[in-house]
Amino acid sequence: MNEKQRLFDLSGQTAIVTGGSRGLGQCMAIALAGAGAHVIVTAREKDSCAETLKTITDAGGTAEAYALDVRDRESITTFADAVRASGAPVQILVNNAGCNTRKPVLEVTWEDWDRIMETNLRGPFFVTQAIVPMMLEQNYGRVINIGSVTSVFGYAGIVPYCASRGGVLQMTKAMADEFGPSGVTVNCLAPGWFRTDQTRVLYENPEWLAYLVDRIPLRRPGQPRDLDGAVVFLASRSSEYVTGQIMLVDGGISTGATRATVPEKKD
Image (tube, rainbow, N blue to C red; front, side, top):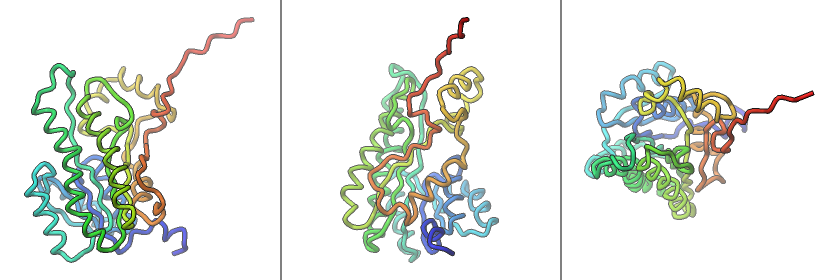
């Protein structure tokens, strides 16, 4: 293995991916395993991680699953204690678990707001609080908070979600400042428009999809594998001087570009 390959090699490291049983979390767990990491995948129901584990082990990687509800304090404590008791030091944490509710502002309930904030913002904070001490003991670690293009853009119909993802970005910056002296980097990986369970209903509308694609410079929505390189980079030694940053993987939609009709040239 040459020096360039070593920069992205995660062999001998342990990575935690919350919400890794499906969707983008599953894809990122598989990518980290492909780079050599032993992956701990979590979900509220441990058995729901079976497909992720099988995909990783079939490809020659190693992985295990734990139950974790990021909205529950006791669940976070129990999970962290179990990981520590396993004896495997953790170098990488991907705070991916998240949720959304699509409603106009005037229809959002108190319970909707709490569920989104507890899952998307409070959960990553307290999971990090529980896991980072293992990194501090090594003077090395990579925390990757999953944000969204809504960390920097606002969209009607998902205001609580936008608020939570904006909070993730600010939390990332503050954590980066706090943990940087101890060798732990904290960054925000922000996907653009990807088809997931949360967004499936939108992609079933061909007019909406055409509207979306028209605003993406690369002219297509994201595919799950588009995140592989980004998550491995942020998890690896190659990103050692990158912290407190947001990495948008969005096909360029955050440029704010829109298509304008070009007038026909007249003779």
